[in-house]
Length: 482
Image (cartoon, rainbow, N blue to C red):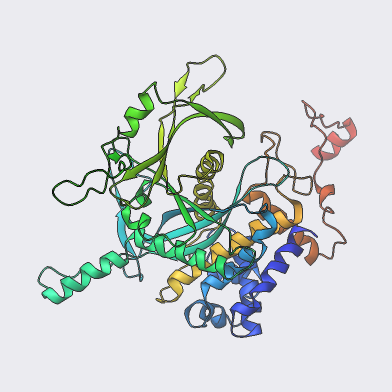
């Protein structure tokens, strides 16, 4: 099975997500158009890529604005095939993060002004855009320890609450404060984790597995820790000067006043990192393209007032890692990392590998906004504005899953050859998948018997250093002069 056939098989599972069969066929056709169109990834360009620019296109736009379908059902094929990639009793590792898709129009539903993520740290700029919270599940190869592949499973819109005018009545301001809490990124992140837990509970193969979620410092707070769904563990970054506490000592003689909830104050994470009395261990993980031994310090039982006295935490301190920009250059050091985990009994190797794999969701954001043009669609309907980006992300997730089902995790010879200036990569990139998908679509449209009939158009032999001079005779010169 090639990539095209595997992708078509996954898109066929969308039939139950749409009310009619013709609507499911239209969605599958638009998914191919949005994946393979060039330049801006608009609905009009997707229609042109599928060769329907001379037919009635109104139904294609109504698919996002009027057709009743649930965007969450588009990610169901990923959950259905997830147990095939997980070892027995292994947790489901997911990453949580938010992203901003830039827009220009001020009257697009859900568009707000936010900090530009590409602005300089010492000069913050503002931009308009649509805010989304994404969750991606991490999949590793079962044969060897290698890079993870992140498959998006949720892409939730997170527009901020509309702020009333200054002279608005107090009732509007009171309602705004309530809506502000509901539309906070942390609340939407908790709701996303709850939806993932419910999807896992609906499947017997995933019901008893632990959900291991990792996030950055913006999600490491009491709003997330105190509202985690059952059988869910969260790993996040904490400040280096965070105020921690030891466990409460054994109950002795009752004193005056209310009972204590926390033990004595513990050193800050930075102080523990510099303390030579705390032992250091090396954890074997895959990071930055190869297997490495990363030095860490672990404190198994601490408490944090933001998470509450009923939640013991594990503190993991990653020491600064040395690296060189080139061979023989000066040895530089990265910044240390301070992590906390809501499960004190979690294996340190699984914990550290799960947080290192969180970087893959950043790669998802880059692919979605740079190569797929997520949220570039010029739609104005309140229902179409969030559903079109969700549709694109779901199609992107199924394309990644199709590559794993067809060829595995490695970059095989089935993919198009890389240019000579490109270094051979361990796994295929999204650009490799899109090029192969276009190649197989063109081969099918031309009636080719197999993929690979385009090899005669390119010569793999190295070109000569100098071009051969054109030999012309005296007779040809006289003819040209005449």
